[in-house]
Amino acid sequence: MSKEIVKTSKIDIEIGLDKEKMPIHLAWKATEEGMDREAEECKAFLLSIFDRNTKETLRIDLWTKDMQVMEMDRFFYQTLRSLADTYFRATQNQQMATEMQKFVQYFGEQTEILPKQ
Image (cartoon, rainbow, N blue to C red; front, top):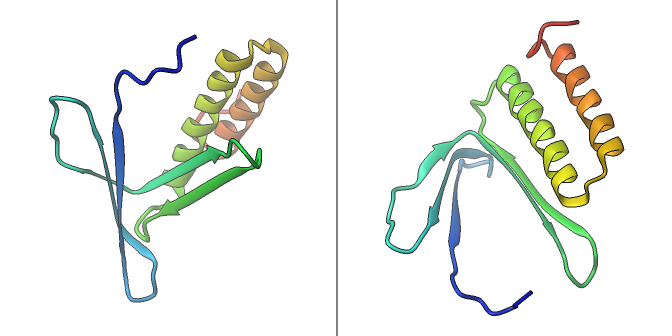
C-alpha cells in the first residue's frame, strides 16, 4: 500500500458560543477539489480521533442549546448503529458487531425511536 498522498480534503467546523461559552451555533463544511460550498448548520457533532503516538482517543462532543432530548436520542441511535457497522467493516468481527447491534436495538426501543418488539 502506497503512502503517497495524491489528494487532500479539509473539514471545517464552526462553533458559535454565547456569553457562557455554550454552543448556540454549529456549522460544518468539507472542501473537495473543484467544489466550494457554504457551511451547513447542524445541532450536534461527535468527533473522535485516535492518536497515533499515545494510542488514546481524543474527542469533542458538542451540541447546541436548542437540541431536544428526542433529537439527541435519535442522534445517538443513528451514531451507535453506524459505529457497529464501521466496527464490522474494520475488523470483520461478526460476533462483536452483532452484540453491538443488539444494544443499538435495545437503545432504540428504550428511547422509543423503534417500536418495542
